[in-house]
Image (cartoon, each protein chain N blue to C red):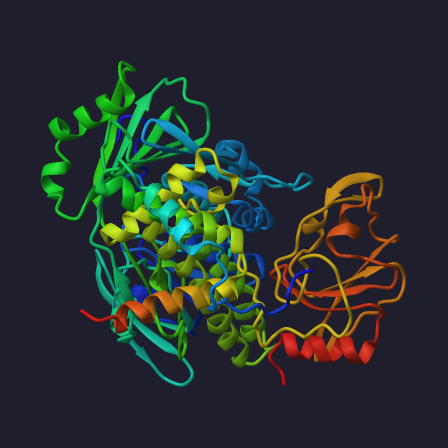
Length: 534
Length: 73
């Protein structure tokens, strides 16, 4: 256990239906109360759905796990009301340095673009994040968070899912319209479904050591290849809150995890790295990792999300970040399906879009792993050649890969997109996550993403767009020049917003379609397409 | 002018081939085996960046690989 943090214990409470049974199925039951499951719960509740969250434990994440949260993830939490406090609580950083041997090989700066509400990246211990998410769930009347509830069996019929749940008071059955497995890389739910989970397991072992120290290191990400204090392996140093520093040591394939965890083994490693700086050991663990994903993220009425659906190497902070983005993608679709505004076909696009993103994350994290941990002497030689060249040669620096930090994957191949028929500049093509921009509303400084409040939006540059409807679902119209103004020109620049341009934006702040001139029939067709009604 | 779809040049075009080969060998003089290998790896990276075109690089990689796999033992 930790010196700087005491774990909360959340009380198990028996619910009336454990004894009396259910009167109606729960619309959504989420299995797993980690960052991803809790985010999904908040997002579903925000969209008006009552949700039940089952967690087999009664506290937050133990030890040192996820650390870095990227801008898009913070934007999602900001929509749910938590962005500001997490950004303030976390450690903000922008500079990364890469060392090879004794010398610096390369340096990067994350934030190349100003005028975003959320920072490029924050570092925060997973238990602090989960604490905030749990508090928000507990304060939300639509979220029913149940601790010490373990799912032990699962049956599906056409119209519902039955979960057998074990509690301190024994087992009971719970019925749901939709169940979401957010129970991590070792997902029991995935196993109960018999879902495949294929990929590559890496043999290298890594040591995590969290230390408490008042060190003069700047708040930067430092990565060493083959440093003098840990020859032939890599080391990563990251700052977290409370003067805790996370240090990852690559140990190689033959390391004995039990032996490596012993303080008498860990402390000399840290001493060699940190020199005379006084430190206290806070947490030690040894891990191996894998890159794999489920073939299908949807199995009937059960959806896989986060690490239960895909597992990546830690390089690039793509695990928790991509899981939260899964939740962002799934919540609005579940809400529209349950509220009868879309057919269950819409949920197939959750698999299509997020499996596409998972493949992107897997590709990136596998490439980083191949660079950090070369599998042959020949690839080690090429890697070292890149690092030596990078010291003096600008051309070699883009090849240095110590982790490509998480950025959201645009859903460029999504069936929900309507393809462009006109020419646009910039990144806001169909499928892209909406870039934020500073705007003015009623004389006040606001942000674009704050105005995209959960439904479909027609963002119109100047007059032109009219509300469109599909069934009883209608779009909101946000007109630049009437409802908001573009104070600094960033909005117009990022969206290539020439006069008359109209964007159809999805409930998860992604671009569905865009035109140079509004046409009601085209907008309605695009809305139908974005609802998978075609 | 940049060629939109350049092809890997497979006809000789180095002037004074013996002189070039001499320089290539000489670049490894007094290096350990390990340093010489590292030098060749760096040379690949330097030249690859100079070429820059992914199609040409892919053709070069395929040629080097197939020539190695088909080479006489």
